[in-house]
Length: 287
Image (cartoon, helix red, strand yellow):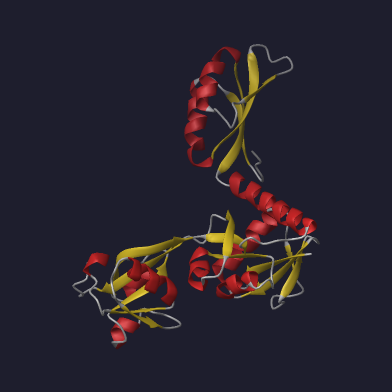
């Protein structure tokens, strides 16, 4: 059975469970505090802290893991990204106090103290830039460090920057961008059954991710307007055209379209006298 390390709490855990559920792998646990659960019989989930998942996967405790790329980089363990899961987007940023003279990363002088719970990424980033900063490792909220005089700046994760602003800090640069990833050990050597299971898992999750942001559109259109239809709904390999029983001069067209612009697509179809327009969600999409 393939063992998959999943985040045990927080938004990352919620989004992961939703994705796996949509892929037909619902988490079947014995309770909210269960440390493991079945995922459709072929897979077993292990619930651990997101920051511990790189270690679990690298050490072989789990075959596959879901965690943020920032945590993978900080752990510095030999892991490969198998799939970008498309959620948990955030940035690792450097931030200074509002009254600081530091306006950009180039203004950071040698010896300046930077507090962070990402000391490895921070140290390597500034070493690569030739800036000899002093990294102050901390755990928990970094925003308090400049106020307490522990450091002049911080490096921390943010999604919107609102927490930094509330604490009188402003961003001066981005060190890393991150999203949730499906990871395995680098050059992992699984037996054939596990290799097949990993490939099956990647394919199932990827089909759901690919389907998100798309809609399946159907409409009846005049046969003499098909050239215009091809421009309006090109689909993946062109729209599917189907004759309608007793449809006369009208045919049915089907295509996968972008969810973000579907309202424009409908307007364009109506302009060429389309009727019976139906839009539905796509659960999975394979190329």
